[in-house]
Length: 382
Ligand code: SAH
Ligand code: SF4
Image (cartoon, rainbow, N blue to C red; front, side, top):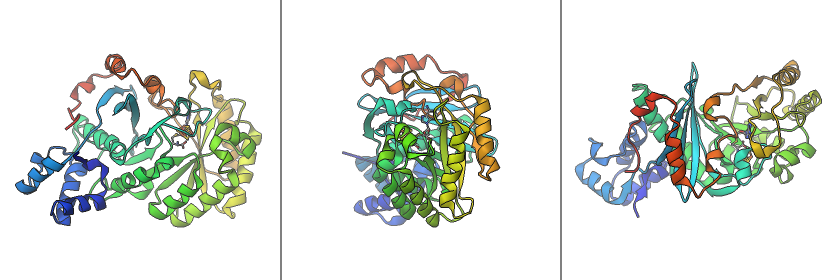
C-alpha cells in the first residue's frame, strides 16, 4: 500500500524519506511542495532529483479527499462536503472576514459525545479521521481559494477545529495535523491562530498543553453541573470543577493566552440572567482575580430532532451585558453562511443517511450557489 504523505508531519516525513535513503533536507523540500505550493504531482516537484521522484511514485501519494459538494454563500462563506469513504462524509467551512480567513474543519465522522443541541452529536459516532484526512481539508481549501481568488499569498490565516467531531477524542491523529498547521515549512500558522474546540476531555486538555498549546476553546454551555450534565453528557465524567482546573493549568503553558468559553444560547434552558451571574461566580472562582477567559455566545442553530429553540436576540444581548458588566470580554457570534447551512452544529445534516452517498452527490451538484464554482481546480484523487 502506498503511503499518504498528508498523514505525515515533518518529523515523520523525514523518517519516511530516510527509509527511502534520502536526507532530511529532501523531506523539507517535499513538505514545502505539498503544503506551501499545494502540489500533489511528484513530476511537478522540479527541484527533486528524478530518482527521488521515481521512488516517491512507487511508494507514496498525496491523497486528497474527493469533494462531494461545494456551496458558496452570498456572504462569501464556502462549505465543502468531503467523502471519507464507507458512506461517511465530513464538512469544512471557509469564513472570509476583513482581516482574516478562517477555515473550520472536522476531526471525526460523527461524534460520540452526544450533546443535546448538536446535530453531529445526534447522528452518533462513525469513526476517527486520520491525520491526512484532517489536513486534506486545509490542503484542499487553501489550494482552491488561491486559485479562486487568483492569489499567490496564503488565504487561510486561521484554523478552528469546530466542524464535526470532538478533536480531543482523536488526539493521536490530531497532533501531527496541528504540528503541520504550525510548521513554517507547511502552513506556518501561529499558535494563537489555530484553535482546538473541546467539550472538555480533561486529560487530553493537559496533554495538549504539553504537546502543542494552541488556542483553546471550551464548550461550556452551562454554569452548573446539574444543567451541564443534561446538555453535554461528558460532564458527568469530567465535571466543571475539574474542567476549570484544567483550563487554569493549560494557561500556564500558553502564556498570555486566554480560554474562550463557547456558550450556545438555548431559549429558556441556559439563557436566563441568573445563569450569567452563575457563570461570573464560576470563572471568578478560578481566575485568581485576573481576566483569563472570554465568552463567545453562539446563537443556537435549530434542527428538527433537538426540541430546542434559539434564544431571542434581546435575551442574548441582555445575557452578554451581564457578563461584560462584570469585566468579562463577551462576543456574540455572527451567523454566517445561513443560506448554505454552514453554521456550527448544522454540519451533519448531509451525512444522516450514510448509505446514500451516490444519491447525495447527484442532489448536491444541483445546489451550487455561485457560478465561480466552475473555476474549481480538479484536485481529486492522485
Ligand atoms: N466537539 C467540539 C468541536 C465541534 S462543535 C466541541 O464541542 O467543542 C463546535 C461548536 O459548535 C461547539 O462549541 C458546539 O457546542 C457548538 N454547537 C454544536 N451544535 C450547535 C448548534 N446546533 N448551534 C450552535 N452551536 C452549536
Ligand atoms: Fe460532539 Fe462537539 Fe457536537 Fe458535542 S458539540 S456532540 S462534542 S461535535
